[in-house]
Image 1: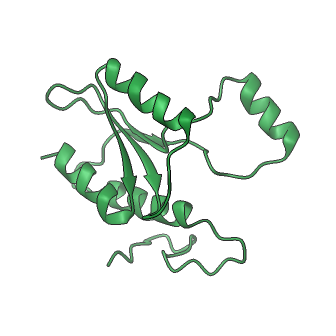
Image 2: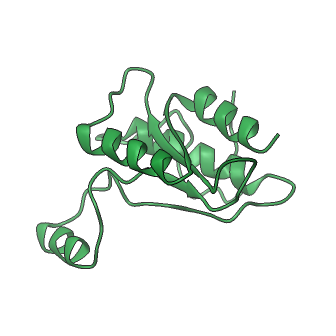
Length: 131
């Protein structure tokens, strides 16, 4: 399957951390896929799912961070869409109400917004978007 990691500093999808985050590991591979594209799209990942100290979480909230924002935002218009928003989940993961609301609100504003279960689903949505 996917074993990118040109920089070698982050874990592969096999993980190996005691309190690992499978969604994080999938997202790392999705970012590798985006960075390996012939023309790297303008994108950014959000910090959802990252555990931070309470004072840091408060500062993030004060600075405008919102619950449920998708994991990866691609700022490249294609066809009828102004951009692509990808929420990364494991094969058995479920979207929160906040995440579902973000998906709906982004679609209302012309985004393609997808909740992708597993690495293959993420890659398929991205590749389809850029076809």
